Amino acid sequence: MAFYNSFKFAPPKWLPFQDQEILDSVVNENFYERQGKKFENPDFELKVVFDVHNYFATDLFHRIRLSDVKNEKLVIILSSPENAVFISVAENLNKYKISARNVHVFFLYEYANENGKVAPWQSPYSRSGQFMKNFYFELEKNLRMPIENIHFWADNNIETYSKEIEDLGGADVCYTALSWSSGIGAIDPDGFPAKNLEDFLSMGSRLVTPMPEMIAHDSLRGMFGCAGDLGNVPPKAVTVGPKDLMASKEWIDVEYLVGCGGTAHQKFPLALSMFGPICKEIPGSIMRLHKGTCYVAQEVAINASNQPDFDGIYEKLEEIKNKEEKGE
Image (cartoon, rainbow, N blue to C red; front, side):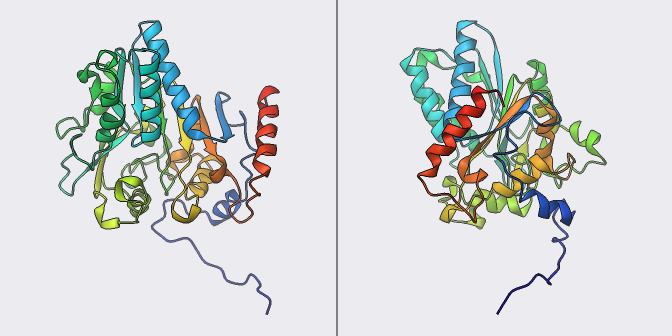
């Protein structure tokens, strides 16, 4: 029996982006071939790398070190939980006696319950709590930033969180990752119902009800046992807005999540964000308007239906290295 393509269907109506032709085309784009500075902002770059965690940790460590050496304020918007990165950076700061005294930390988003009450950092369900446990308390006491430099989400600052960032001159760098719906953390079209792209880019911090895909996405993470435990993920979130990310001086996006069974569920959301149109229905697409870098793990970049043998990784690394040296 031979299969042939005669079964047509439309995307589910609840998906924000509905153009079937684009949905079909972006999945066939080659991340390796599209690397480099080939996007709307000439200072935005796509890079496929062997170890995304290493690039994330190195970038964060370098910025904290410069803030200490130059005695300059460093304001960051930080995704969490990035525990491997937090631990690595804290250990290196301790090793080289680098102070984080000038660092101000804001969090990309935080969980809230069904009534909009924000999870305190002392809760195991708190994203900021993961930062405190794996970064702040891992640092030697004399190297820690003042506790008031850590800007926790709270019930009384949801609407003013953007203003807190703005009052410090905006973020020097924001670190983000995409959700299953091509949202940026908890920034998705449902929570930011904009009239157009310009309106979307002007929106600040708020309480949102994440799309079901976001709940499913988070249920595969370690905080919830990597078990797909949908009922154990808090149903709401507080989040910065597109305005805060666009006002950041630089944007670093990291895509490396590989769920149970090795499925890279960030592959399609990233493809849509990188190679689809820039629009409010695809929040991740707005990073292409900004100065920054999107680091993509090979597990996310490769075609899942045709994975190369492990031995081929070394050839691919050499190819990437040669392109970087040529400035491609």
